[in-house]
Length: 301
Image (cartoon, rainbow, N blue to C red; front, side, top):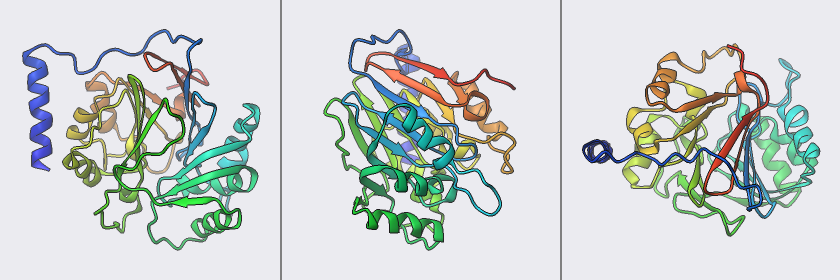
């Protein structure tokens, strides 16, 4: 942990002394004639669901928000994800990533698994015995979907133009009793533009990845754990150094996400923040050299 912090501090000092920008400004006009990567942070209220559409038109879905239950009729799969896929003429999903088995990440996947053809599933693989998680695994088995438990260093091959690398869990990671810290972390890089998808990792895992020596730098960061103060440590944000970040969070949620101190950390670093509670769906398109970002609705604070 100390080694990682010293490395980050050294990088910052070099940049300051030699007036080197921490990152090049990549937000700008996208050439729509070039092959495009599209990343959609879907507004699924208090939960995560992210759709990637690659230049070769294959798709990846990371998480699926909450599902309906006796306490709420809202089902992200039935009411948000499947309608979005239908509207955009996406009949199948090449890769489905279940970062970890909390209900706000896999609840909506039951309806997606029922409705869509899926080629591959990537799961953190922890032992978790909720009925919801078992329902997902049963559907995966019933539909004979290729099931994988990835680890750090693995590459996910979807499109030859796009590099997808797993940064967590590490091969020597001992599964935590806290599912958040077993989250699959993925970095997606298309030429100069990169995205870091973090699930709900907390500071312990942020430092674990830092200590591993993996390159965490990214143009766009999916803010870990809905902007909770369990995550987004200073050392982690220094290593990622994003231009833009997205908080996936529900309006007036009972957890108090995002935490004001965490919002201040991002604002102090001049990181452009989008929030699904204020902005609805947040969509990025990139040609690999620049990116543009649009939100579904007008922001209301």
